[in-house]
Image 1 (tube, one colour):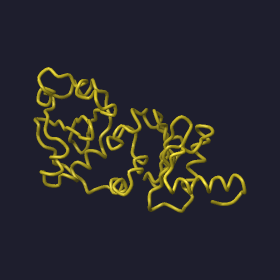
Image 2: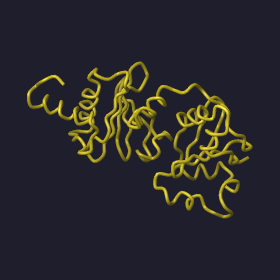
Image 3: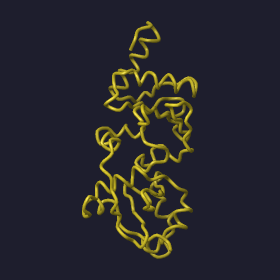
Length: 227
């Protein structure tokens, strides 16, 4: 039986007990799926106007995408469009399972650039990285994710603590978890990414921390100093 429309994210978070934690659990554990799989899995008549194709609904948002959540025995489908998620569940039941707010979600609340720490095709990237290839562990502690913006995740004890995304040979985002800063991880990740992708340039659009990082790398290159 096709999954039925249940609720939109704003109502879930506002009106349902533990709604924010439910939403966070879904988002952290969902993976992008092809649109045709979503269409085959849900009852769109319970959501869209009569005879409105899903493609038309999604057309005005280039980052709109479909996702599947399969965690702890619960399956949820949803479409993300214009910053909102519309959830479909078995029998249209409102999602209820939740886990404590994860550290990665808290890090995202501190700084949206922490999205580089997210897994491939995660819903919380909100389409920023586009559709991504399956991740590849290219070292014991380093993951490469190919796509529109090729990126890397660096792990310590199984936890992503640094991320780097690129576009057209430039570093777009370089982020280190706040608990792991001032340990040289940014420089180390940049160097390892450069060995994989070849020469990388820094984007001209940098945060203040990024500008300091770029300046320190320049000093290393020109003077042999430690950053």
